Image 1 (cartoon, helix red, strand yellow):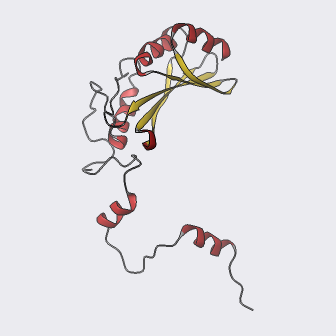
Image 2 (cartoon, rainbow, N blue to C red):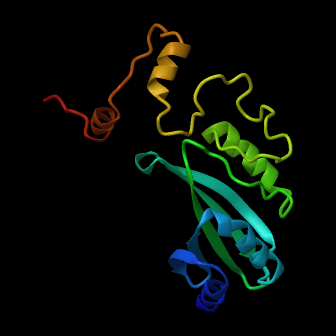
Image 3 (cartoon, rainbow, N blue to C red):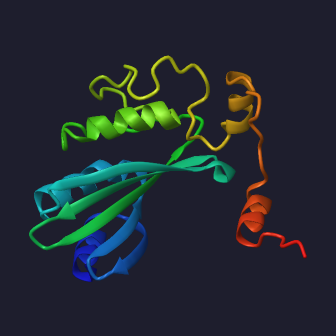
Length: 177
């Protein structure tokens, strides 16, 4: 993996590099380097399989982190490419033309985080959350408790327990003497 990242660093300005183990590394890149890097990895380095595309909401920094995980099956190694994008203008170039399966991941990220991938097939069609009209639910500023209280009626017999106290009571019941 070290040889690969050394080669890539000569071609692209790579950011933070984390080698998780001998067959897995993560590298950060600037937004404008993402597509050329992905093409290099696919066409020249043997990373032909897009394993996943996911996001993390770094609300404190007002950014999303996109992670593209690629696999080189013949070498039995994986590389994750991380890129940060602005939360306020959450969009990224689509890579569905490089890996058609990316369109599915991009649709999910649009619906769950509100990250747009202009030009991606069916990007604006409902995918998982049919009829959803609220803030995308995977954003950290989505209030799940408020949504639940506003959406679902309280039923008789339903009680809400403090998880910590409930587990303490389950694990260490009070024995009466």
